[in-house]
Length: 224
Image 1 (cartoon, rainbow, N blue to C red):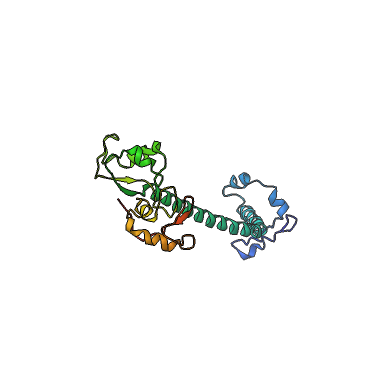
Image 2: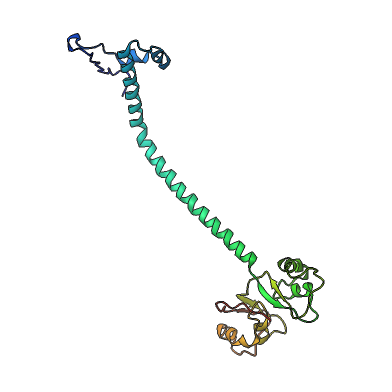
């Protein structure tokens, strides 16, 4: 709607005998500012009504032009909000998984002569004795001095159970099954054998460098 159009604004007076009130064109009404109209108070009521009717018509015309542009933007906004919600859920799930992994652990029964450095150095644990502080921090509630641990006590190692194992010199299936992060039970070696028949034809013949699949048993934690 362009301002060149004439608004047929006819304001009826209270008495029919007075006839039709004055009408204003869009050009005439646009000559007034909002401040001027508001300053009229009780004067020129018909002009004020015509002015606000014209302003409303202008706004409606503008809305009619913009609405087709706004609707696609609203759809894009809704899609982005849905993506943000999904990403937020994914991030929260990842944070929960990280917290679970950090809090996970396996129990290790301390053997005579072991220290935190030695336990950390085992290849099936960290393979690095300098990682002993991780074990100490996980067990601060039961260890007051990292240099004083006792055979027969249990430690939590902040490590997940193994799902695969790389054979080293001197390993055999029973020994591997006995590792704390495998099963902690040498008698469970047949499970490893059955899961690896594709590469192990004889359970008594395994070789350094072979990677074995460790089938997990639901709820099994393992200790030794």
